[in-house]
Image 1 (tube, one colour):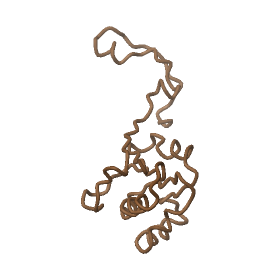
Image 2 (tube, helix red, strand yellow; image 1 turned 135 degrees about the vertical axis):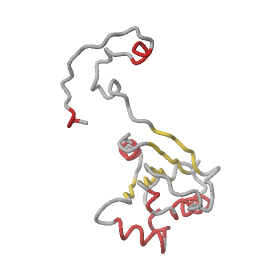
Image 3 (cartoon, helix red, strand yellow; image 1 turned 45 degrees about the vertical axis):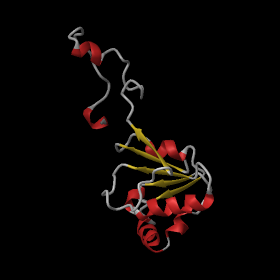
Image 4 (tube, helix red, strand yellow; image 1 turned 90 degrees about the vertical axis):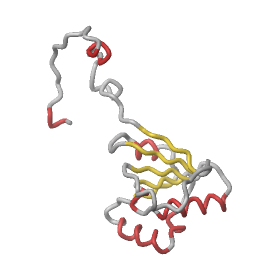
Length: 147
């Protein structure tokens, strides 16, 4: 596959995980450049695709034309692992001209549980709660504003 599409809820680490493997980045929501990026996407999207591969294009759905631009670019390059698309929102079905089949691999990223993020010691089991096997009592060091 020439590109990966990583989708998921906000704050599940799509961007930071992708940035760890990307060699160049395009952040479509960068407040200093977002307007210019959108205008460039509408006039000459190939310029936004320039950069070392794999190139991260974060919040790509702000300029859905990038989907087709990447498909075209991958046809020219004929290489795997060229682009990483991340986003929390999905554009309307009719926004992209092509599906991306054969070009994009899709990954759904989920947020970590409190146990996985080490914000819980795992003493409460959802499975046991639903089975009625566990009574809960305890104190948390976290406060409501923390969430």
